[in-house]
Amino acid sequence: MAHEQTDKSELIRRLIAERWLTLQAGKTLVERRGGHPEYLLQDAPTDLSERSNRQKAIAQYLNKRHS
Image (cartoon, rainbow, N blue to C red):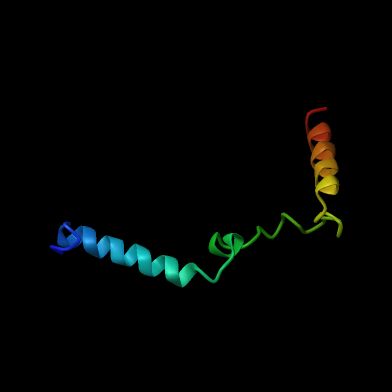
């Protein structure tokens, strides 16, 4: 504690945070956040991984929603 120049509770908090990050390091961002929502990709076309297709799909959705 003297080396870190912090109190005991701050040191424990920091150690827990570091340990949590090392446990989570192998997961992707989506996995850490709990995965994709089930309804999100349920009826999605298979080619949505391409940016231009996603942009078209979003534009169609917004046009339909705000028409």
